[in-house]
Amino acid sequence: MNDFQYSRATDTASALELAGRSQAGLFIAGGTNLVDLMREGIVRPGAVVDVTRLPLDGIDEHEGGLRIGAMVRNSHLAANELIRERYPLLSEAILAGASAQLRNMATTGGNLMQRTRCYYFYDGAAHCNKRLPGSGCDALEGFNRIHAILGASEHCIATHPSDMCVALCALDAVVNVEGRNGSRSIPVREFHRLPGDTPDRDTNLESGELITSVDLPGRTSGMRSKYRKVRDRASYAFALVSVAAALKVENGKFTEVRIALGGVAHKPWRAETAERILTGSTASDELFEHAAAAELAAAVPRRDNAFKIELAKRTIADVLSELTGETAGAR
Image 1 (spheres, rainbow, N blue to C red):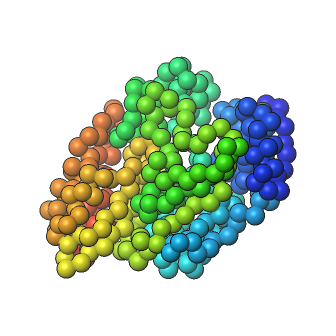
Image 2: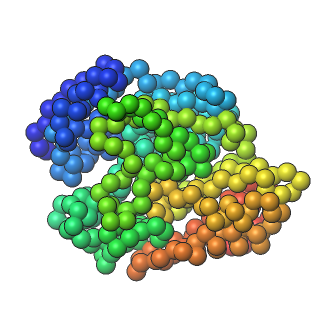
Image 3: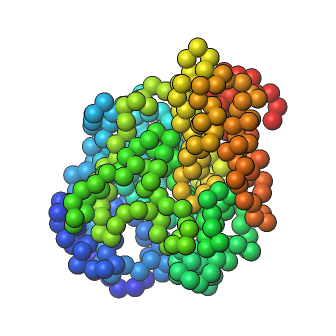
């Protein structure tokens, strides 16, 4: 682990000022991902600013929805009565991720900032454009079973690891941040980036910006919802494919549809094609299969992960079938 300057902030202003003293300054809260990256030498910050004492741990009513402080622990968020009642999709997704011990430490803001779990990103001897831009991507021709099938580029095929973020994407959440140039709000759908030719940039945060809260809009409250995670083992494994779906059905037709996918792209993948096909249509197994196939039509498989295409199709269709009460039959 490289030398770095450690400091502890007591308010947002001091956190921004302390982080700004170093061009490589980073914020730390639960540390469930950052500490691993530092220990392995993958990330080498010049300064680490502890933000655990910032007063950002509330879950409050906000403009018809809820505002979640960036310091709210994942376990508290999943167990919160308002979240479980209005946004059960988010609670389900959080409980599907990591262990209870990690959820007790991980924060809302930290979860949004997770880095990929790509084997080659964590292997200092491997070529990785995310870790060292311009060095190449060993995953392209290597063991790429867990890697992206949507939105990838020739520079990176890593996937985003968070379960919570997939649910937030489906719920049209908004991330609020503070920086030296003021505050701004970023829709979760635009918060994370596809790799393009800059895979080292995971998010659209500017240098030194700090996540302060996440807003859940009121209009998605009360929708039928479901989070399903398909993984190699039943606990403590990242998603091969996950589906977060929230929808409203009136008179047998979809009036609102929100679907996001995990485990398939460099960011939580909003299934806009499937949403367009479903909205205004009458629920049926044939419709679900058609919408899922259309969403995955642009998928580009690699040597080891082609199975994810069919897996994603079936998972989308099964989740929709469950939410609408249709009989899916054998798939």
